Length: 476
Image (cartoon, rainbow, N blue to C red; front, side, top):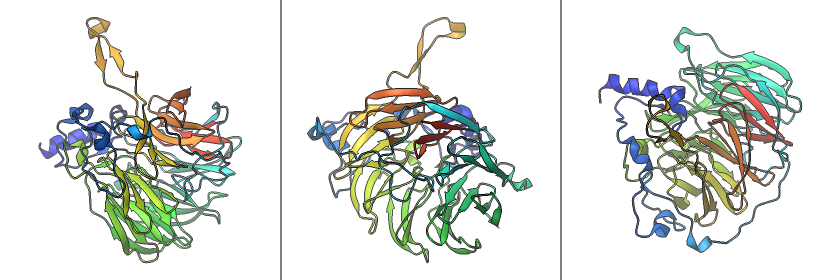
């Protein structure tokens, strides 16, 4: 395929019409031939699906993503598992939540929309809304598609302040990407695709410092006690001093020209920062020096089609009880020791979402829209719920006449989050849908007013969702 044709395909994939497809919009460089995409729905027959779809503890398994159907473990049929009681989440300082997993929040008890507010620019062809909001418990902070940061009152939704961080540079007319991170001393750090990292006063929005860089930040930053960590579009992670923005160190992972529009922020574990990259690498680095401690690559050994060549870890890794859980687009969902990187188990599941840890299980949503409950101990699957079951649409021929045909457009799902004994998912059809966390059975749904591609957060008794049309929706 010629370069010009590839770039044309890349542009088409980046448009909103493609965003509800199997994955998010893709940033595809020339040289990646996206052929054979119809094989996503292909299922290869297996003689023993029980052995093929479940990983043994301590083993690496051969992955054939996109061509394999996951099945629950027969040995776990009718076996229950522990879920912790719901607890109040006081704040949500980082994209993906607090450093340790939230598990089960006491929020959205009535599962009804309380209010909706505009955050600014909506998601369009060149202005993507990709940042998950963060909150200190009193205010919730958002980043729109044009680098505008807004603070809202958590209780009422009233706007507290707003600041525009678009530098209005000719070279960067469009700068999607980036995100937000809060510190306990009241700083709000903002990365953006406009080649800068910014420190704001969270109470007033006043700019404390701005650091221009030569690259575009793709993901939300994360923090420890003294550093701000941010990754760019070229798979490089930077460590900045929180006080003055001085760059302390950088680390370059393998450059990868194909990636997912959404991107995962690093997660801090003690004196290490664990960074996911679009190359499928998950690298633990010393927070003080940037020296690598361990590295894992979450990629299948055999790539069976063009989409399986995209290795991106687009969902933030989940950290709980000295274990880190992460999934890649390439078809590897793994549990690893956070200190050593040693793999405990792997499951052949592809995802662009963050795993959700709760009690004895980890919940994950696959690219195919399968919500699954996976044993934290063994990697065996308790149950799988097809979120798109019955959602394929029938379309008539020209002018509504002729034979009906099945249209493969199904919603794209983001989540889950466990709140008030509901597993809550949002989707590109503008719905928030709840499921029983013990069985996967649907229990309710509500309309958000716009497509949702960003995972919800919880603060106090409220669940918040940012929609693609630039709205912050509060659910109680």
